[in-house]
Length: 123
Length: 110
Image (cartoon, each protein chain N blue to C red):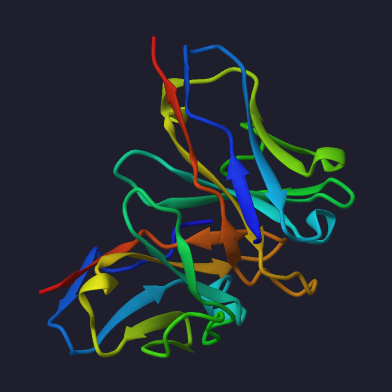
């Protein structure tokens, strides 16, 4: 079964660092781009960025560039999203998702999604 | 990049059809044939319903269809069923290997 399994919920204080994970299985992990999507409480989905596990290439949405860092450890088929200094507005559900395909002309959408990781930032 | 514009809500009775619009610009929806639609039930992961404007992933009922005209894409759900009640989000390629989502539409089956 093709799936992405994310790490568990986190509760952090402002200023703390955090790294959440997304482990892929059931497919060639290094052949598909992985993306991250934020959903703040009561709000809609926001496209954060994508990373190619094969060579660690990344593309960030301008809104998230410099705010988060995507990385990958392909030896354990795991993608990461990290913050160096969390803020209260980072409180949200974060989803990882697999890009359906990549042809160099555009981005078709995410076909496999993780279950989400809830991040709460509160003093 | 600005979020694509969707109506906040839509509704229909069982068996009816409903269409949800998604308006962008020539820099996203109008410029590329990479529009996707997601169904999101609260507490669950989003599900891809349409990609490349009008293609359905395997397993998605053919009651769901997508189209595009100019800067506006549309998702039509025919033969509404109770389980179709969910939030629906459109997304479009926006150039430079980035994408953008719409604000979401809450679909209610009356």
